[in-house]
Amino acid sequence: MRETGDSVAIRLRRLGREVGARAGRGETLLDALLAAGGPVPHRCRQARCGRCRVWVAAGAAALAPPGEAERRRLGAAATGARLMCQARVAAPEAAAEVVVDA
Ligand code: FES
Image (cartoon, rainbow, N blue to C red):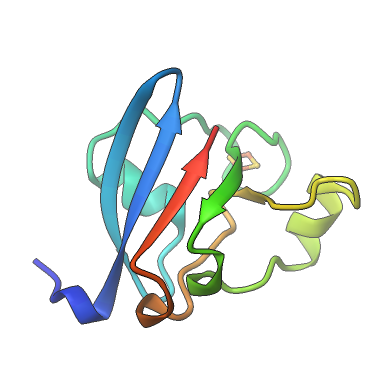
């Protein structure tokens, strides 16, 4: 198990349920949540299908900014949205928790 300082808590809220995990630096939200065994919507893992889109409710500072493929898929109007298959933890120490709503 990772030490707390090397990872950040991730919480996905969806359909009245929550899935929790810890994600280390460089890890995507999707991989962390799947490793924790949660039911997590996804399909392509390549910023194409949009099924893993979430809205970040807290802890955005822990995530790397979206790359070009993610920005293209989300579009300009999706402020606060991320794709879990693309959103990677960059600074686990920057937030106590990352909370996302599907
Ligand atoms: S799984 Fe398809 S965009 Fe993330």
